[in-house]
Each structure stands twice: as C-alpha cells, then as structure tokens.
Image 1 (cartoon, rainbow, N blue to C red):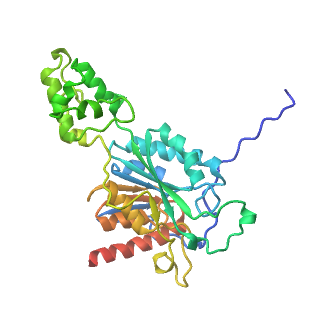
Image 2: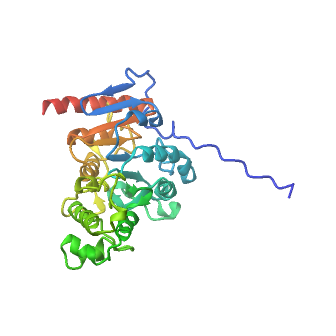
Image 3: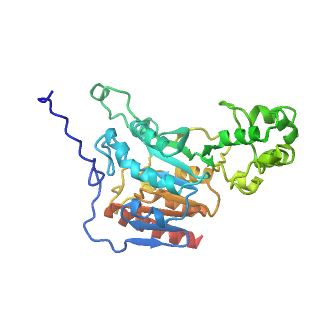
Length: 356
C-alpha cells in the first residue's frame, strides 16, 4: 500500500483568456458605471454582492464546462468548485421571492445542480433554447464527434426554498394546523369550500398546493378563533402576531407567463446587427444571449422596480433587458475587454432610453 501514489489534486480551473474573439489591450477608462436603474462594476462579483440590493431575480450565465468560449472551465468537473462561492453568496441574500435563472450546457447544469440544492435552491423547470439546425449550418462531421449535433442550451428555473422557523413552508403550514388541535376537515369550513382546502393545502405529498393569500388568512383566522387557546397565535410568520395575506404572498416567488409560451424556446442564434460587434463586424462575445429571451425570464419573475442581479456580466444583456423593463439591475464583469464593450453597450442603451 505504501507504494501507491495518491492522485494529484487537480488545479482550479481557469475562467480567463480562453477562446476570446477580441482582446483589448488599452486600460479601462472607467471601472464603475451607473444610471437611474443599472449599476455595473469591473471585478469579481464576489466582491460586490454585499453592496447590491436584495434580488428578486438572478440571471446566471457563467462557466459552462465545455471549453467552448471565454469564461468556461476546463471541463464539467470544475463546475461545482467554480460556482459554490457564488451560490453561497446568492443564498445568503435571496428571499422566498427570489428566482434564479441558471443558463448553462446540459452537463454544466448537471454538475452544478447538487451545489444549488445544497444551498437551498429548489428546481422548478428546465427550459430549452433550441437555436435550430441553422446553428450548425451543416458543418458538423458526426462521424468524428460521435454524437448528434447540439443546437441547444438550458436555462433552468430555481427558487429559494421558503422556510418558517427552520421548517420548509409546506411542513410548517401543515404543522400549524395540527398544532391548533382542529380536525383536518375543519380547514374546508375555514376556507368556505366543500373539500378543496383539506385536500390541497394540508396534503403531505406531491399534490400539495400553496394556499392563495386570502385562503391563508382564512386558515389562520379560523385556527386562532377555534383552535386550542394555549397555542395561540397560530400561523405567525414572525412568531409574534398572526400572518396576514400580504405577508404570506411574500413567501413565494413571483411568476407570470403569457399564454402559449412553453419551456422550449424556438429561437435562432444571434446574427447580424443583433450581435454586439466592433467595427468590421467581429462579434465581441461568442455566447451573447438574445434580449428577447432575457426580457422574457425577467418579466416573468419580477415587477417594475424590482432588483435583477447579473453576476457574470459579459456584455450585460440581463442589465439591458432589465433597463428596458424598468427594473433595477446590478452586475460585475471580471474581464476588462468584456467590461469595456459592455459599458459601451449600456451607455448607448441609456441614451436610447432617455430619448424614448
């Protein structure tokens, strides 16, 4: 056994200087910029999270683990280590109303998922951006790559798991009703329905429904009036007074979806004037996201005036989308070339916004 050499510890994977289309050598003119809605800084976002307002929405587009572009890790095995400090920071600032949109490759997301779960992010849905066959343009040698050509990316929706007094929301809600000493069927009387309240709001399995705020208020009012007096108050979110409808509404992330939108986004890759380029037509960032998709996810999970975080700024696509939607946005970018051109884009966007 003494002759066996332990495998060397892998070096931390790099996220800088890989596959860039353009490199700008000149020093930055500015390292911080803001207007009435957007604040961006040059540097590692880990150094800025504490300065940003509480997020209603986080749009993450960091390392993918496929060696495909600037910002990537050497492979997917480096993904957990790369993301963990960021995910821990997001969790420390998120609330029950915060939604995380996690852009990645399939293998990158798979590698990151256990870390997201570890820090309290709960999976909601995997959304697929299908760029179509035009994305590969018939230039893939399948006998060489030994797989079907890839035309997709994933944008996975997570929410921060709500807890009250350390218990997950469902367990706490059911526990409060049980603590009142009232029979389960009495929940129907409390809510003014024949059967739905006991069947939906007090279900211990996967059929559980989040009670609408008005129904939560009815449950707590009934429990506090008819339940065991010794245990009052029931359904207290702060441990002092019974929770009201507005308090309960904040225990769930926001979401609204236009009719007809599904989790498969049929949308060509960026081309032409839509892609941010330098004079001569050379694209600055090879993984720039479409503004319509960024707008779609931000609008679905925020309201006007809410805060959007874009931890890995790139060309600040989420910030641009947030600005157009009247949301406040915060971002940082560690690469000076991207920061310079992203700042140019934001300044141009800001001027256009003022002209509208």
